[in-house]
Image (cartoon, rainbow, N blue to C red; front, side, top):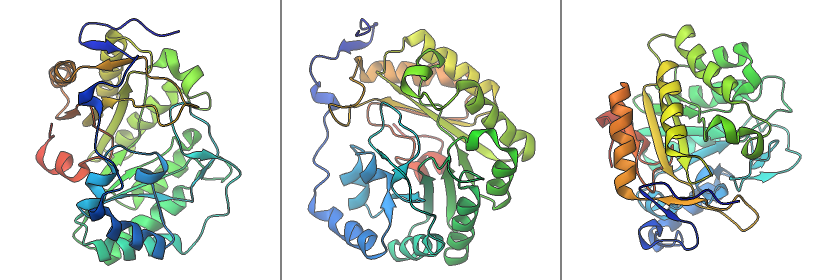
Length: 297
């Protein structure tokens, strides 16, 4: 069942021109692809079929995907493959750092697949990657985009102890849609994780993001924004969901660019210091600019 479009949205029958982006297979992206293959590394840019891939790779940046390319969860909007994962590669953090150094990155974003098969959910691997990147690039900023670690406080503390500049955990959608879209996740758990970050490390910058077009209403988005702010989140991102394949959740509506600006205004009214809201906004897209300049359109 498709949710009727709300003011500021179009029905999902056809991809509007303003929600289209150029092919990721651009010539300028080849150098990053070659380096990633050389280092046997994965990126969420490729695995999640991000529409901004060509732009980011051409600029010589990418979001590193730790712990392989096989996820233990199956979210209906995500194209990362669900399969039995391989054991963690202890050399991967060092290869990530080497690639970041070769790319000359000033800001490194690390994320991972969900690894519910591991006792700490992969937290120690995140910490190792942060330390290796810090060793290779002492002045670079580091942002982590983590899973929920199933609420394990010790896992969360391990990541925070490694000292990332930004701790990101995406809420993704509204609570009503969690059971269908994120059946192995919990809205309240994700909120609690973000609040716990501030309790453990009060000065830590926190970030979260959600997508529009999955069947939610505008009021539900505003409610999630209020919940995130109440949890102490500093940076919030909001973008248009684009269906990666026909096997994934269909797009329920296309939110107009001016409606994304209205969401940004609402988020700032709620007190978010930094807001990044727009059709092609993704949690890690322009992450350095968002962190350092307080948001870009």
